[in-house]
Length: 615
Ligand code: C2E
Ligand code: CA
Ligand code: CA
Image (cartoon, protein in one colour):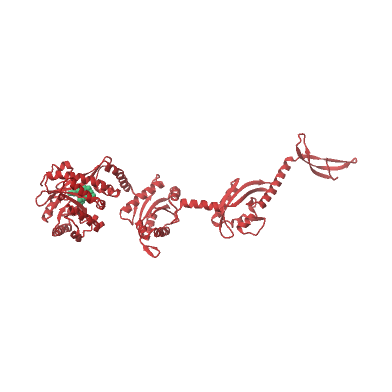
């Protein structure tokens, strides 16, 4: 039934049921007039079911949205993209201390002023990207300052929706501060160093990989500096770890002060710091930085009123070839710093290929030395020494050689320090000594009852508490007279711990063996010590002998050493005698014993047997 007032124009909406029983909406419009006492309507009837449904949905959704906006416990918002205005529900008032209202409206510029400054750019960029790239979702995290001036992290989730009057972003934002702070803490802990508050190795490797790539792309120079605090262990041991941490903090502060903007500083642990210098115009900048660092750390650090001096050692590697990645650059800088440290600290070394070769050699030596011990690859050569008074053999110095399957013959200057640091010297020293003791009887039988077999002792061996007992045991085991045994110790070794070493030497002497002071003249050369040390012989270092006939000062020193030694009842050996001129000179100034290539090089035991008893 159509009901309605009688009027000229009409427009009606009504519902009908179609044949299938479905309700349809009809819009009917037209004109009506009285004709022949009847009201006649002409017009059109349109099925507006779909349109009605859409409008209905829109109305409902808007109503619902408004209801949701007001009733929600979350901060709800929509942004109308035509005018860039944001509408938020009342929940925002709690956070930002606004006056209580159901709804708040801001222009985008106004809203941005509530975002903390550091995050504003990020917000603007994300918003611009969303709008201009027609993105569907607007998801972002940023901080606002709440009413008590605390930073609050807002997690924003929004969606683009097309309405009749234009496009909107509908969404919610919630306070995500707890989660975000936890996340940041975890990030901080895995990327930063707690003591100094600077990046750690993990962050450094990741970030410097990126900046190396950028530097190369921009055709700029890139370098790595390894920095190590000299003797930091001493600071920790002397003042304790709390002061140690203070030193690290101050150290870091100073470094930051010296470093320029294009430097990324990190702590790799302990007292190791690393800097990546990127985007350098040329390599000169690095020299400037290194100079400043060395200069700065020549001044003391003020730690709670205490002045602590800490110099630094540095190693530098500069990216040159394309294959240089962060790991290889770090390795190269590490090789360079190792050279700085072994070269006397408080200095800087630049990586080069020669350093690398040296390190490779050291690594191979280190790898092979275990095998040397296990397979007893180290053995003694014997170098004869002759009396000047009668040209007869006075004895032999035992000189170690290492015949490695991999490396060939290795000289003691190379492997003794290595065997010392690895501790293998004790084991090697013992089996070498046992071998020499075994051969001693044969040598006595061949040459004379009075010969002396001289064995060198290293610093680590002297410190070994079992040394004296071991020697005593060997003497007994092989039935040797202690008069046939001599030990050579350098003055620099003795000086490392004078009192303790004198005690060991005295114990050795009490066994009946003799002691020679080796390399005399190269170390402290305190003539005073000649008087107090329990020694029998002085060996003048070959560096003096070499200059006989060339340097009268060296000749003078040799003469005086011999005079003084004789006054103290000590015998004098000249080592490294290579020429007749040297020999004649030494005989002329009453040197007692001669050792050197002039008479013989160090020989294998089998060749010693054939040696002449006299020269
Ligand atoms: P050193 O005790 O001063 O030994 C003397 C060095 O001078 C030996 O070098 C010897 O071969 C060398 N030499 C001898 N005569 C001449 C000469 O006329 N001219 C020249 N230029 N050199 C000559 P080597 O055998 O290379 O030993 C070097 C150092 O290694 C030794 O210096 C010693 O300090 C150490 N060493 C050698 N064997 C042992 C060992 O078994 N134990 C320990 N702890 N150190 C050892
Ligand atoms: Ca020696
Ligand atoms: Ca020597």
